Image (cartoon, rainbow, N blue to C red; front, top):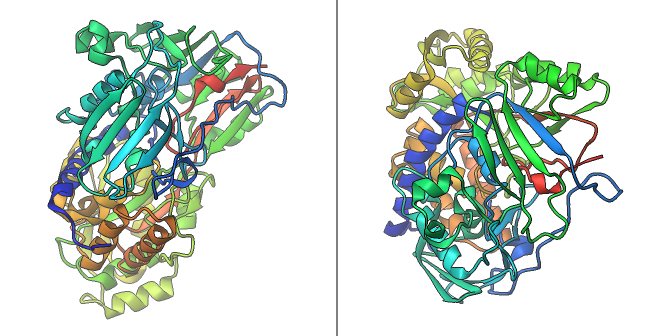
Length: 547
C-alpha cells in the first residue's frame, strides 16, 4: 500500500478540520458528544463478499416480551436546535432525529463495527473503489410510501453538497447511481476503508426523494423518514414529542406510543423528576449526583461507555512546547487519577492513548505517560528549559471541568519549576484563540461521530487540511504516513498494526496528552426496559418499552 497521500483526499481533511472545530465549540454549549469507526468486520468483507443480514430484534434488557403502549418523558438540560440532518451539529437535535431518519448502515452497540440496516448487503469491486448496495425490501417512509434507491441517492447527494454542514463525511464519494429501485452504487475517489462507517453517520439518514415534493425548509420543519417515530409537536424551549410510526419495518416496533424530550436546565429539578416519576429518563445527570440517584427507590443509574476523551493542548508553534522533553515532562506530571476523582467523581478511567477503548483499533498496550514526577523531572532536565519557565493556561470561564483541570495541572507543574498562570475567557473566545494557535496551553475534548478512528486521526494527525493537528501545530512525517496508510487499508489486522504504531508514536511525542475516558450517565425509572446508549451517544427508542 502506498504511503503517499492522494491530492483528492485533502478535501476531506480540510472539511473535517473546519467543521470539527465548529462542532466541538457547539458541543461545549450542549450535551456531551456523539461518535464511532467503519470497519468491515461482520457486516462486509474486504474482498467483495456479501454482508451478513441485519439483526432486527428489540434490545430489551428484560427476558419477557416487551409490552406495547405507554409514553416516556426524557428530561434534558438543553432543547433541540434544528432537524436538518445535513447541517445541525447539536447532539440535542441529533439524538432526536435519529428516531426519524435511518441510514444504510448502523453502528454496533459496542462501537466497534458497522452493521447492515436499510441496506442488507454490499459487494466491493476488485479495485476497492466501487461499492454496490442491495436495499432492504418493503421499507416504507412514515407516510406509507415505499423507499427506493432514488430516495437513497437523493439523501446522500444532499448530505454531500451542503456548505458548512456535514459534507466532509462524504468527501471520499465521487458518484452515486441508482441502477434499479433496490440497488445503489457508490464510487469513491480513492480507496477508503471508513466508507461503511461514514454511511452510518446521522447526516446520511435517508429521506424522501426531492423532500417528498416539499421545499427543504418545509420538509425539515416536520420531517419524515423510515424510522420508528414520526413528527408530532415542538414547543421550542419547552418540549418536543414524537409519536409511533404505523409503517415501521421492524415488526412489532416501536413499543411506545410516544416519546417526549422535555427541556429542564436545572440539574436538581431533573433529578427530582426521576424521583417523582414525572420523567422516566434523565439525560446526562451530573457526575456529582450519580451516587445520590443510585439510592432512589424505583430508579436506576447506568454509566454507558462513550467516546468522550479530554486532552491537554500544547501549542507547538510557541516555545518551549516545540520541545518534546517539555511535552513529556508535562504529560508525566499530570495526575490523571486525581482528575478522575475531582472531575468525574470517580466515574471514569485514566487515558493512555489518543484513541478511546470504545473505538476500533484502540491499543491498550500504548505506553502513554502515566503520572510519575521522577520521570517528569528527568524530562524537564533534558529540555532547553531545565529550570522551568512561565506559561499561561487558557481556560473557559464558567466551566467547572476546565477550572478543575487547570488547578490540578497548575499545582503539579510547580514541582517542575513551571509557573502556570490561568487566564479565563468565554467559551467562544477560547475556541477562536485555540483555532488561531494564539495560546500556550489549554484543554479540549473529542467525541466520535462514526465507528471509525479515521475521523479523529484526520483532525489530529494530518495538519495539511487546516486543523493544525487539533490546534497544536504538531507535525510528524512518520505519524502522517501511518495515518494515510491506515485510511486506505481494508485488512483489519494490517490496519490494527498501523494504528498501533501510530498510537505509540503519538504517545512517545507526548502529543495531545489524553487525560481520561468518561462514560455517559443516565438515570431512569426501573420500569424503563431496553434503553441503551451507544458510545457515539445515540440511542434507539424503538427498542424501549415500559414494564
